[in-house]
Image (cartoon, rainbow, N blue to C red; front, side, top):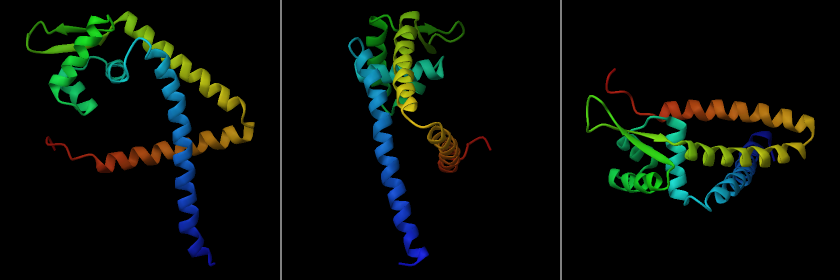
Length: 161
């Protein structure tokens, strides 16, 4: 087998390893979500996380972010609001404009979930060698940069420019 014929195999092995690793990382995320899901179903939790991460979204932006129609996003918000996790505030200048914000209770749920994830990730990292952690973090930083560049290339051009 020549060096050039080994390259596709190495690439396929890397992709398979990355998939397995992603599944492990997703499992950590799910454990944290399942602990929170005792109180909040996954679809609502995703909406709450989105509003918490992006802050001050309107309903249409939330629907786009979640990939759902606005009426579905509105129903999710109804449930989150009824649970005391989210509030809708109207604009002083345009009563049709509604801004979504996470409540203190919602922040606590998101904070507990993040703390659970960090604890699980810390435990995994502690089981690794210091050299392995360094290589992982370096590789992840490079991966994130490459993935970000790929996402920017795929993003449609702005209509303004």
